Image 1 (cartoon, helix red, strand yellow):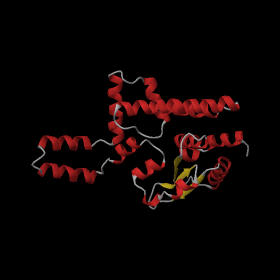
Image 2 (spheres, rainbow, N blue to C red):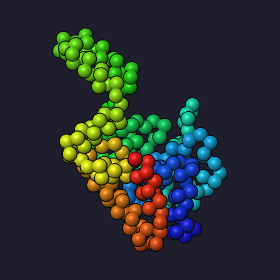
Image 3 (spheres, helix red, strand yellow):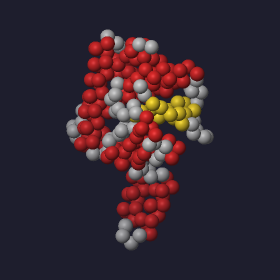
Image 4 (cartoon, one colour):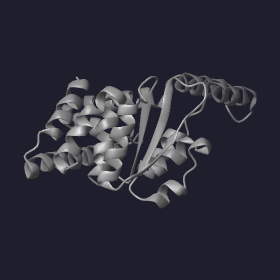
Length: 229
């Protein structure tokens, strides 16, 4: 397998793992991130996909582990890394949201914000504690419960809409957020840092095509931008 054949193989992965996970696998191959997580949905962990996985990891010198979860809608989670030591320190079956985020190399502030999201049961427990506490008012408790009803991703989207309305973020900049694999923390500085990372990723992808006379990157960029509309 030469480089051109290897890179073209990434476009074949979409039917097994989707365009976004295919892109993250590609970014790992380009050394644009230290690790990646691929979700293989039910029925897609085929012999052909396993062969693509083996060929690509061998060609780009990557390490991986396949983790299967019981009673799940997907066949497996595949954790990939550039160095074996990173995988050896990671325990997929025991990993928390925070562990996974740090393994994938996401900004620590983003990992902390996302991993603090509570489950429905935990939210109601905290709400009950606030209602019975002398230090919290009923209004504060109700406000907490109202905010807890929205997921972190929903709150992030609402925050992005605020930035757009206040003209602190443009539609063009928002599009670059589709090129980063994590959800930034809910502050303007973190969002703009993610926008810059998205720009850097776009440049790395365009450079791949320019240096090798490929159209691999344009394929992914077009797909990602189309899905964001």
